[in-house]
Image 1 (spheres, rainbow, N blue to C red):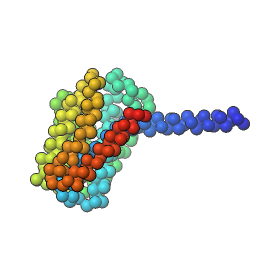
Image 2 (tube, rainbow, N blue to C red; image 1 turned 90 degrees about the horizontal axis):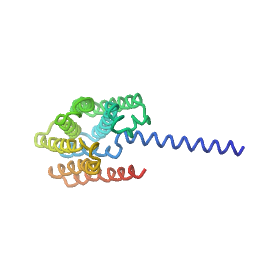
Image 3 (tube, rainbow, N blue to C red; image 1 turned 60 degrees about the vertical axis):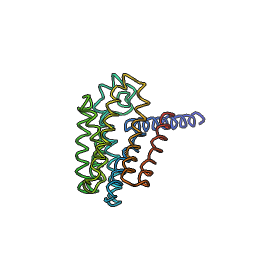
Image 4 (cartoon, one colour; image 1 turned 45 degrees about the vertical axis):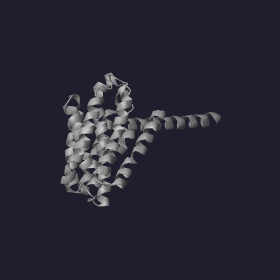
Length: 248
């Protein structure tokens, strides 16, 4: 009996460790600490456009943004599998913590969920999400290996994410997603050499967190201090998730 009890306890503990490791692998795959930055873009876009989109539709846009961002991150590793096996074997797919089949299935489901949520939010959001999906695949499958096209494509993804919460194009703020896209393109170009230059990783991490700051500044320029503060508040989960991630 004591042996059986010990065996059951050991088995349960092993299962807990396995579940925790699997969840951590999925968190690593979708870049969990950066997910709040995906919310900052449409939140800022919604605020600078005068909050024209109804609250229910806006909530659907936030769901769409997070789903499409997470899907893009998973597809990124899926397409980079062979390269990561050589350069980053610690990533979840080369390590075998998650199978490529499972990754593709989850990425596909996330992408479909994001598209459905965007279409339900409104016509403009649906069209914008469709463009975003196209750019995600373009970047993950091809342009990220090009010095110029890669950053431009990534910047364009963020620009469309900013405009995802609009009801329609707003002429007076059309320059704002361009500014955000330019910033992200610059960060992407700088991050291109981080595998060969590991010292860059900390700076790139902070630069990516700066996306929230840029979004908040754009809202502040539009005249809403309250909106800027709300957007800037997303830095809290970004930093906390980042610190928790590093400590686990």
